[in-house]
Length: 398
Image 1 (cartoon, rainbow, N blue to C red):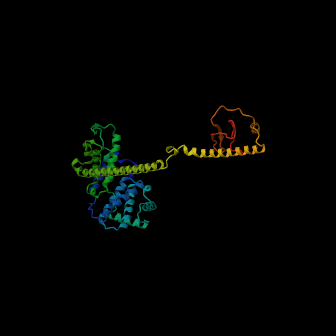
Image 2 (image 1 turned 90 degrees about the horizontal axis):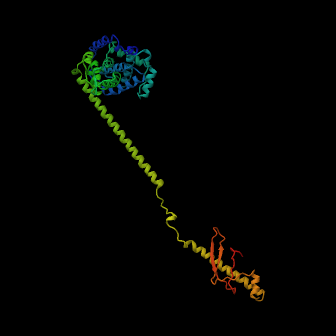
Image 3 (image 1 turned 180 degrees about the vertical axis):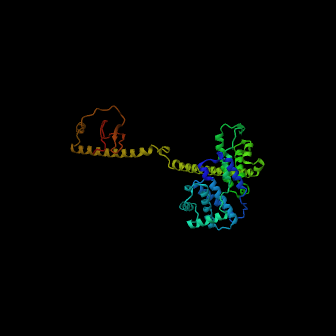
């Protein structure tokens, strides 16, 4: 069937109704599932493993669902060890792919071992064990692998899933193609979910496929939920589907709640992470830009007297030394000249200066020899001269 699907969409051909009727006939002869497997607790894990492997090898849905169905029936009849369960799962996948797919799509032993290692399966497959397990499975099913699953019906029912007279949210359907594309995604979601819970094995595969289509129409708010055309096509009325649809919608609501909780949890974690980052950023900013504990000089200006007193002391010292030097020079000159007259003394000192009319002490500008050079006003009265004279005092000259 998978091989036919790859070559041609049989549900659109002239023989679609005949193929569907054949499948429905074989469906009546399917063995009954009792859920008596001692390892039923590992069923979900094994189904997830087969789903990963089938997706990796791009197997069609019919091959995957047939492999799961073979595994369910075989586990229901025998008590199998954990190690043998892995080998049985791989053998079911190989048989289903050989029956449903083309030869080049069948997984190779080397690829199976590589994927098993990647999936943390502590089993190394060999050709001999796989062949022995395949023979055991074929003998258990009397060499009959034509076992219809819900995946064999779904495409046939989806072909008529949306009609021109349907209403979408109370309005006429504007695009059948787009609505069918969205409804197909919903239908395959319910189809894949139906194999996760072994309770669905108590329904016929064709009924599960029809319920997937009806549940998809309900989720997309397409009315009516179940049309006359679909009832004639599937041979199931609304009453036949109600129980299965309710189970699917309950599971769907649980998935929505779980997804919402996960999203909320992720949002809370993201907000907490942002809050921690903001606090860290603020702390870093405070450390980098906090107010200095050292007071700037501008805030506490030193009094001017602290800088004026040393200068005044230096000027006073210079004044005293200058007076002493002048006095000694004059005394020496007087001793040599035997007390010459005042005119002679003036001639020795230099050109005569014009007398100043000022009666106050003379102001003398003194330039300090250190850097920076400050001009300090210094006043003194010459007691060695009979009149007041202006004398230019050099900067620390001898």
